[in-house]
Length: 324
Image (cartoon, rainbow, N blue to C red; front, side, top):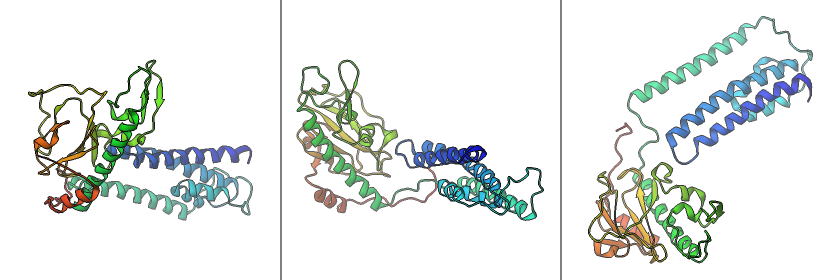
Protein backbone atom coordinates (compact mmCIF):
# COMPACT_ATOMS: atom_id res chain seq x y z
CA UNK A 1 0.00 0.00 0.00
CA UNK A 2 1.55 3.30 -1.07
CA UNK A 3 0.84 7.01 -1.25
CA UNK A 4 -2.05 8.45 0.73
CA UNK A 5 -3.38 4.98 1.56
CA UNK A 6 -0.29 4.15 3.60
CA UNK A 7 -0.46 7.53 5.31
CA UNK A 8 -4.13 7.09 6.21
CA UNK A 9 -3.69 3.58 7.57
CA UNK A 10 -0.92 4.99 9.79
CA UNK A 11 -3.57 6.81 11.83
CA UNK A 12 -5.41 3.54 12.43
CA UNK A 13 -2.18 1.76 13.38
CA UNK A 14 -1.21 4.46 15.88
CA UNK A 15 -4.71 4.54 17.34
CA UNK A 16 -4.82 0.75 17.62
CA UNK A 17 -1.52 0.78 19.49
CA UNK A 18 -2.92 3.31 21.97
CA UNK A 19 -6.07 1.22 22.40
CA UNK A 20 -4.12 -1.99 23.06
CA UNK A 21 -1.79 -0.19 25.47
CA UNK A 22 -4.81 1.21 27.31
CA UNK A 23 -6.47 -2.19 27.61
CA UNK A 24 -3.24 -3.72 28.87
CA UNK A 25 -2.85 -1.00 31.48
CA UNK A 26 -6.42 -1.48 32.71
CA UNK A 27 -5.69 -5.07 33.69
CA UNK A 28 -2.22 -4.49 35.14
CA UNK A 29 -1.67 -5.24 38.82
CA UNK A 30 -0.79 -2.49 41.30
CA UNK A 31 -2.29 1.01 41.46
CA UNK A 32 -5.55 -0.42 40.08
CA UNK A 33 -7.48 2.85 40.17
CA UNK A 34 -4.70 4.82 38.47
CA UNK A 35 -4.11 2.08 35.90
CA UNK A 36 -7.82 1.96 35.07
CA UNK A 37 -8.03 5.73 34.61
CA UNK A 38 -4.89 5.97 32.47
CA UNK A 39 -5.87 2.88 30.48
CA UNK A 40 -9.30 4.29 29.62
CA UNK A 41 -7.69 7.63 28.76
CA UNK A 42 -5.28 5.97 26.33
CA UNK A 43 -8.14 4.01 24.78
CA UNK A 44 -10.19 7.21 24.43
CA UNK A 45 -7.30 8.98 22.66
CA UNK A 46 -6.67 6.05 20.36
CA UNK A 47 -10.26 5.50 19.20
CA UNK A 48 -10.68 8.78 17.22
CA UNK A 49 -7.38 8.08 15.45
CA UNK A 50 -8.58 4.63 14.41
CA UNK A 51 -11.95 5.99 13.24
CA UNK A 52 -10.30 8.84 11.31
CA UNK A 53 -7.78 6.54 9.65
CA UNK A 54 -10.52 4.09 8.69
CA UNK A 55 -12.75 6.86 7.33
CA UNK A 56 -10.05 8.36 5.12
CA UNK A 57 -9.03 4.93 3.92
CA UNK A 58 -12.51 3.78 2.89
CA UNK A 59 -13.25 7.11 1.21
CA UNK A 60 -10.03 6.84 -0.80
CA UNK A 61 -11.22 3.40 -1.90
CA UNK A 62 -14.62 4.69 -2.91
CA UNK A 63 -16.53 3.02 -0.07
CA UNK A 64 -19.08 4.51 2.29
CA UNK A 65 -17.66 6.46 5.21
CA UNK A 66 -19.91 4.48 7.54
CA UNK A 67 -17.33 1.71 7.42
CA UNK A 68 -15.28 3.97 9.70
CA UNK A 69 -17.57 2.96 12.58
CA UNK A 70 -15.62 -0.30 12.65
CA UNK A 71 -12.86 1.77 14.22
CA UNK A 72 -14.85 1.55 17.46
CA UNK A 73 -13.96 -2.16 17.50
CA UNK A 74 -10.27 -1.27 17.74
CA UNK A 75 -7.55 -3.15 15.84
CA UNK A 76 -10.00 -5.80 14.61
CA UNK A 77 -12.17 -3.16 12.97
CA UNK A 78 -9.15 -1.46 11.40
CA UNK A 79 -7.99 -4.79 9.99
CA UNK A 80 -11.40 -5.41 8.44
CA UNK A 81 -11.38 -1.96 6.83
CA UNK A 82 -7.93 -2.47 5.29
CA UNK A 83 -9.18 -5.69 3.67
CA UNK A 84 -12.06 -3.98 1.86
CA UNK A 85 -11.94 -3.93 -1.90
CA UNK A 86 -12.29 -0.72 -3.88
CA UNK A 87 -15.84 0.45 -4.51
CA UNK A 88 -17.48 1.61 -7.70
CA UNK A 89 -16.13 5.12 -7.36
CA UNK A 90 -12.50 4.21 -6.78
CA UNK A 91 -11.34 7.81 -7.15
CA UNK A 92 -10.83 9.76 -3.91
CA UNK A 93 -14.02 11.29 -2.60
CA UNK A 94 -14.14 15.09 -2.70
CA UNK A 95 -13.81 16.68 0.72
CA UNK A 96 -16.41 19.36 -0.01
CA UNK A 97 -19.35 17.04 -0.63
CA UNK A 98 -22.44 17.39 1.53
CA UNK A 99 -22.94 14.60 4.04
CA UNK A 100 -26.16 12.65 3.74
CA UNK A 101 -28.91 12.75 6.35
CA UNK A 102 -28.04 9.18 7.38
CA UNK A 103 -24.43 10.18 8.07
CA UNK A 104 -25.55 13.14 10.15
CA UNK A 105 -28.00 11.02 12.18
CA UNK A 106 -25.34 8.37 12.80
CA UNK A 107 -22.96 11.06 14.05
CA UNK A 108 -25.58 12.57 16.37
CA UNK A 109 -26.60 9.14 17.65
CA UNK A 110 -23.00 8.22 18.42
CA UNK A 111 -22.46 11.52 20.23
CA UNK A 112 -25.64 10.98 22.25
CA UNK A 113 -24.60 7.45 23.26
CA UNK A 114 -21.18 8.66 24.46
CA UNK A 115 -22.77 11.58 26.34
CA UNK A 116 -25.34 9.34 28.01
CA UNK A 117 -22.57 6.94 28.99
CA UNK A 118 -20.66 9.71 30.76
CA UNK A 119 -23.81 10.95 32.51
CA UNK A 120 -24.67 7.42 33.64
CA UNK A 121 -21.16 7.00 35.02
CA UNK A 122 -21.35 10.27 36.95
CA UNK A 123 -24.79 9.34 38.35
CA UNK A 124 -23.59 5.85 39.35
CA UNK A 125 -20.56 7.29 41.14
CA UNK A 126 -22.60 10.01 42.85
CA UNK A 127 -24.83 7.32 44.38
CA UNK A 128 -21.84 6.00 46.30
CA UNK A 129 -21.17 2.86 44.28
CA UNK A 130 -17.65 1.52 44.33
CA UNK A 131 -15.47 -0.38 41.88
CA UNK A 132 -14.28 -3.01 42.22
CA UNK A 133 -17.06 -4.31 44.49
CA UNK A 134 -16.20 -5.66 47.92
CA UNK A 135 -15.00 -9.29 47.69
CA UNK A 136 -17.35 -12.09 48.66
CA UNK A 137 -16.48 -14.51 51.47
CA UNK A 138 -15.45 -17.11 48.88
CA UNK A 139 -13.12 -14.57 47.21
CA UNK A 140 -11.62 -13.60 50.59
CA UNK A 141 -10.91 -17.26 51.35
CA UNK A 142 -9.37 -17.68 47.88
CA UNK A 143 -7.12 -14.69 48.59
CA UNK A 144 -5.93 -16.30 51.83
CA UNK A 145 -5.19 -19.61 50.12
CA UNK A 146 -3.26 -17.86 47.34
CA UNK A 147 -1.27 -15.91 49.94
CA UNK A 148 -0.38 -19.21 51.65
CA UNK A 149 0.73 -20.77 48.37
CA UNK A 150 2.88 -17.74 47.57
CA UNK A 151 4.52 -17.98 50.98
CA UNK A 152 5.32 -21.62 50.19
CA UNK A 153 6.99 -20.39 46.99
CA UNK A 154 8.94 -17.76 48.95
CA UNK A 155 10.13 -20.41 51.44
CA UNK A 156 11.54 -22.52 48.61
CA UNK A 157 13.01 -19.44 46.88
CA UNK A 158 14.80 -18.26 50.03
CA UNK A 159 16.35 -21.69 50.53
CA UNK A 160 17.62 -21.67 46.93
CA UNK A 161 18.81 -18.06 47.18
CA UNK A 162 21.09 -18.88 50.13
CA UNK A 163 22.88 -21.55 48.10
CA UNK A 164 24.58 -18.95 45.91
CA UNK A 165 26.44 -15.66 46.39
CA UNK A 166 24.25 -13.59 44.05
CA UNK A 167 25.73 -10.16 44.77
CA UNK A 168 29.38 -11.27 44.90
CA UNK A 169 30.15 -10.04 48.42
CA UNK A 170 31.58 -13.39 49.51
CA UNK A 171 28.65 -14.22 51.81
CA UNK A 172 25.77 -16.67 51.52
CA UNK A 173 22.67 -14.91 52.86
CA UNK A 174 18.92 -14.94 52.56
CA UNK A 175 17.33 -12.19 50.46
CA UNK A 176 16.63 -9.18 52.72
CA UNK A 177 14.14 -7.76 50.21
CA UNK A 178 11.47 -9.88 48.59
CA UNK A 179 12.15 -8.37 45.16
CA UNK A 180 15.72 -9.74 45.33
CA UNK A 181 14.27 -13.22 44.82
CA UNK A 182 13.31 -11.98 41.37
CA UNK A 183 16.22 -9.65 40.64
CA UNK A 184 19.08 -8.41 42.81
CA UNK A 185 22.14 -6.20 42.20
CA UNK A 186 25.87 -6.89 42.47
CA UNK A 187 28.49 -4.78 44.22
CA UNK A 188 28.78 -2.55 41.15
CA UNK A 189 25.04 -1.86 41.18
CA UNK A 190 24.40 -3.96 38.09
CA UNK A 191 21.16 -5.98 37.96
CA UNK A 192 21.44 -9.73 38.45
CA UNK A 193 18.58 -11.95 37.28
CA UNK A 194 17.52 -14.41 39.98
CA UNK A 195 14.06 -15.51 38.81
CA UNK A 196 13.22 -17.63 41.86
CA UNK A 197 9.81 -15.92 42.09
CA UNK A 198 7.73 -14.07 39.48
CA UNK A 199 8.27 -10.33 38.99
CA UNK A 200 4.68 -9.67 40.10
CA UNK A 201 5.31 -11.32 43.47
CA UNK A 202 8.62 -9.51 43.94
CA UNK A 203 6.95 -6.13 43.52
CA UNK A 204 4.13 -7.14 45.88
CA UNK A 205 6.44 -6.31 48.81
CA UNK A 206 4.56 -3.00 49.14
CA UNK A 207 0.83 -2.37 49.41
CA UNK A 208 0.33 -0.49 46.09
CA UNK A 209 1.46 -3.60 44.21
CA UNK A 210 -0.56 -6.12 46.20
CA UNK A 211 -1.80 -9.18 44.30
CA UNK A 212 -5.05 -10.98 45.02
CA UNK A 213 -5.72 -8.79 48.04
CA UNK A 214 -2.38 -9.35 49.82
CA UNK A 215 1.05 -7.75 49.97
CA UNK A 216 4.16 -9.42 51.36
CA UNK A 217 6.15 -7.40 53.88
CA UNK A 218 9.75 -8.36 54.63
CA UNK A 219 10.48 -8.44 58.37
CA UNK A 220 13.75 -7.10 59.73
CA UNK A 221 13.58 -7.65 63.49
CA UNK A 222 13.10 -10.63 65.74
CA UNK A 223 10.14 -8.94 67.39
CA UNK A 224 8.25 -6.79 64.95
CA UNK A 225 4.67 -5.51 64.81
CA UNK A 226 2.76 -5.75 61.58
CA UNK A 227 -0.49 -4.00 60.84
CA UNK A 228 -3.35 -6.26 61.79
CA UNK A 229 -7.07 -5.86 61.32
CA UNK A 230 -7.61 -2.93 63.69
CA UNK A 231 -6.04 -0.39 61.36
CA UNK A 232 -3.61 0.75 64.09
CA UNK A 233 -0.12 1.86 63.03
CA UNK A 234 2.75 -0.52 63.54
CA UNK A 235 4.27 -0.34 67.00
CA UNK A 236 7.79 0.86 67.66
CA UNK A 237 10.66 -1.03 69.26
CA UNK A 238 9.73 -3.45 72.03
CA UNK A 239 11.61 -5.43 74.64
CA UNK A 240 13.69 -8.16 73.01
CA UNK A 241 13.95 -6.21 69.76
CA UNK A 242 16.96 -7.01 67.59
CA UNK A 243 17.75 -6.90 63.89
CA UNK A 244 17.62 -10.14 61.93
CA UNK A 245 20.87 -11.70 60.77
CA UNK A 246 20.18 -12.51 57.13
CA UNK A 247 23.00 -15.02 57.02
CA UNK A 248 20.74 -17.30 59.07
CA UNK A 249 17.30 -15.65 59.43
CA UNK A 250 14.55 -14.10 57.37
CA UNK A 251 10.84 -13.39 57.72
CA UNK A 252 7.96 -12.34 55.46
CA UNK A 253 4.40 -11.48 56.48
CA UNK A 254 1.47 -11.79 54.05
CA UNK A 255 -0.87 -8.94 55.03
CA UNK A 256 -4.36 -8.16 53.65
CA UNK A 257 -4.37 -5.00 51.54
CA UNK A 258 -7.69 -3.96 53.12
CA UNK A 259 -8.05 -5.61 56.56
CA UNK A 260 -11.22 -7.72 56.97
CA UNK A 261 -12.12 -7.03 53.34
CA UNK A 262 -9.50 -8.59 51.04
CA UNK A 263 -8.39 -11.07 53.70
CA UNK A 264 -8.96 -11.91 57.34
CA UNK A 265 -5.72 -13.68 58.18
CA UNK A 266 -2.12 -12.50 58.46
CA UNK A 267 0.32 -15.25 57.50
CA UNK A 268 4.04 -15.32 58.34
CA UNK A 269 6.87 -17.50 57.03
CA UNK A 270 10.46 -17.69 58.26
CA UNK A 271 13.75 -19.53 57.78
CA UNK A 272 12.37 -22.69 59.45
CA UNK A 273 10.09 -23.20 56.45
CA UNK A 274 7.01 -23.04 58.66
CA UNK A 275 4.03 -20.78 57.90
CA UNK A 276 2.11 -19.32 60.85
CA UNK A 277 -1.18 -17.50 61.37
CA UNK A 278 -2.80 -16.05 64.51
CA UNK A 279 -5.07 -18.46 66.36
CA UNK A 280 -7.73 -15.74 66.25
CA UNK A 281 -8.13 -14.48 62.69
CA UNK A 282 -8.50 -10.72 62.41
CA UNK A 283 -6.77 -9.84 65.68
CA UNK A 284 -3.92 -7.40 66.22
CA UNK A 285 -0.74 -9.42 65.86
CA UNK A 286 2.91 -9.10 66.83
CA UNK A 287 5.31 -11.20 64.81
CA UNK A 288 8.20 -12.83 66.65
CA UNK A 289 9.94 -14.43 63.73
CA UNK A 290 11.85 -17.17 65.54
CA UNK A 291 9.21 -18.14 68.13
CA UNK A 292 5.71 -17.41 66.78
CA UNK A 293 4.29 -20.40 68.66
CA UNK A 294 4.84 -18.57 71.94
CA UNK A 295 2.69 -15.68 70.76
CA UNK A 296 -0.51 -17.64 70.28
CA UNK A 297 0.11 -18.44 66.62
CA UNK A 298 -0.88 -21.63 64.83
CA UNK A 299 1.41 -23.35 62.35
CA UNK A 300 -0.42 -23.95 59.06
CA UNK A 301 0.91 -27.33 58.01
CA UNK A 302 -0.76 -27.54 54.60
CA UNK A 303 -3.29 -25.94 52.31
CA UNK A 304 -5.86 -28.45 53.56
CA UNK A 305 -5.08 -27.36 57.12
CA UNK A 306 -5.65 -23.71 56.16
CA UNK A 307 -9.00 -24.63 54.61
CA UNK A 308 -9.96 -26.36 57.85
CA UNK A 309 -9.08 -23.20 59.80
CA UNK A 310 -11.19 -21.20 57.36
CA UNK A 311 -14.18 -23.46 58.00
CA UNK A 312 -13.80 -22.78 61.73
CA UNK A 313 -13.69 -19.01 61.17
CA UNK A 314 -16.71 -16.69 60.94
CA UNK A 315 -16.15 -14.28 58.07
CA UNK A 316 -17.94 -10.90 57.99
CA UNK A 317 -20.60 -10.68 55.32
CA UNK A 318 -19.76 -8.18 52.55
CA UNK A 319 -21.39 -4.80 53.09
CA UNK A 320 -23.36 -3.03 50.39
CA UNK A 321 -21.50 -1.89 47.30
CA UNK A 322 -21.37 1.71 48.50
CA UNK A 323 -18.06 3.41 49.18
CA UNK A 324 -16.93 3.77 52.75
